[in-house]
Image (cartoon, rainbow, N blue to C red):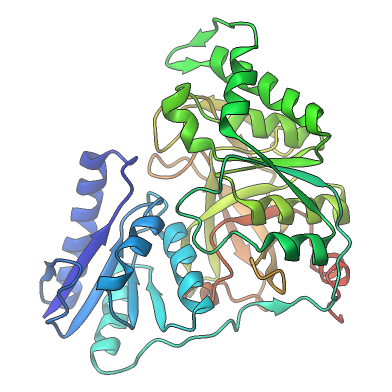
Length: 401
């Protein structure tokens, strides 16, 4: 018997999520020839216990329930709703703590085959085999970076030790309360501007408020715990961050310090803006990855339009069409000593309603095996930028090339 316990975010729209998950489970059951039985978290009376991470934002819930879970941890994912992104964050946490785990992701046929193998005793492995090691004791990134609010609760493997950030990167992290951002927002002039269901007025007020804090603290970049804005001012930070990055000021969402610092490395090495995004689907056989997010520097796409924020359906998000061609993808881990860097090609832009608004598919080069991330990731958000730039990144991080 195969039993499944599920985790999902409170933000996702339950009816849509339930229907998509029902279809996935039915396809898997047909391939397995048996049912997947829903079970309480603590129920391990089964041939195999799976943990279904059904959506982004599930990581904190996983951590709260951790005492009721048992190793090895088999994380079942879908290809929608940031399920894979959340699983990458969770597996990084497990790997950091030397606990065995694996992400079960791909087609229903692929997942069913892997489940059969696990039942036969082929267990998960631990390690960081897909990550390279930073070769310098100090990096010399420098700069002042604001952290507005705390990192989001689901970033369980993305928040670095602040002393190490100062010692290794030479960068200063400045804490700024969410209340201070809200006060700056309230001090802006009201802007009544709507288009359909898009509230541009609130989004543009937030652009102004974030810019004011950037100037007040003399920041080279910042990150915002942006999901808190959904309740407090009924908007998102997508447009603010898109605008800041296009102006050469680093901006990351969800309070993700490591994304902010990784984007700062990209800016220092290449002079480019970069795209903080969620890995949404991985095809290990084809060596491809679909990656998506709701904010994008406005100087990166060939064209863009506006939509609502994916998870909440409010605010103003960016739907950009990126130039097809060579790109590099980078993720620096929170220990500031390992990173994942790969080169590939944007082969198409997508337009799927089950993913964040800007969506691209990347074909990786033969030497870069994206399927390794299903066992040994460095975290969730990955940073995408134009060109084949791995050599320059590795030289900056002290890797012998």
